[in-house]
View (cartoon, one colour):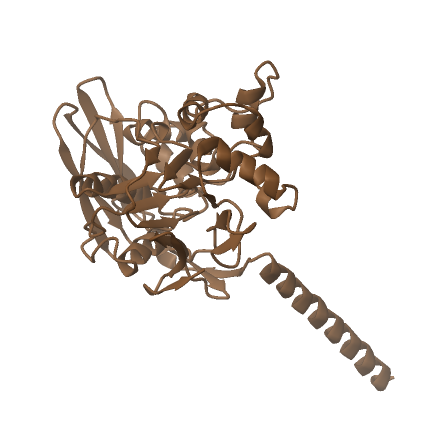
Length: 390
């Protein structure tokens, strides 16, 4: 009897182990990882912000979340002039650091075409990971340890989905805002190409946002959609951005170009204009305008398309879309891969990898990567500062 029980338990244990190993192998095959814990500092929100809102055309309200869970949180706000530049600070509680930056209410739509031969560093899908983003830029010598721009006339391309799923959305966005201004003063450029998750924020779709921001909005006396609506400085700034940019012959887009786009004689300017006009409108099929439907679709639109990874697009179709905009390659994020890599005969580069999370622990340990382009050559760029040619 005991022998049979032992044999039964042995079979059960082996079966459970096989299922567990198969599950781990499946997760790893999808370039995933296992989340096994959070840093307790994740619940410290003191000095989170700033959140900047227009009171009227001449007055801005600057708000921070202050306090703690034991003593209670509160909204600490003050007014400043919208007509003069104001310096603010963004705090990162995980390591007690902060950075200062200057805000202005003058927001311009960025250019979408550049042809200057300068170096390019691209990274995608940071998903609210401030420490990961900051440390990667330091390692790749885009900024120094004081978070100052040192990339000269180079192009830093942020290929969408820098928000949602994490706890440092505000810090990530203000760092981009700060570097955008600094780069421009030194002859360089920061290109924030919007992904589907930035568009979701602009549309008030917070299904993938950390619950933290639901409560942050409440502490500030607001609904969550107001954090990025047109009365928010950050919301106006985000809504000015492009979804496609052509830089030194490389087309940067978060998702990709659906092959049907090649059937429409359209310019980059028009694509960006049509998509931008729909940033704050939730998508639903309209049918009366096939081109607009294609560009704002949540499956076929440039911020959403995944066809390069599903064997549903031919080289002829890829070339057709590249030829439409005079590009030699398209660089995309959106679909997680095990590493930055070249696809489809060097016409597509995929740069979405599983980045480390600020406050979360994962197995296996994650490491960031980006794409460095120099002299017509493409390199994997690593979080330790090294680069290897693809």
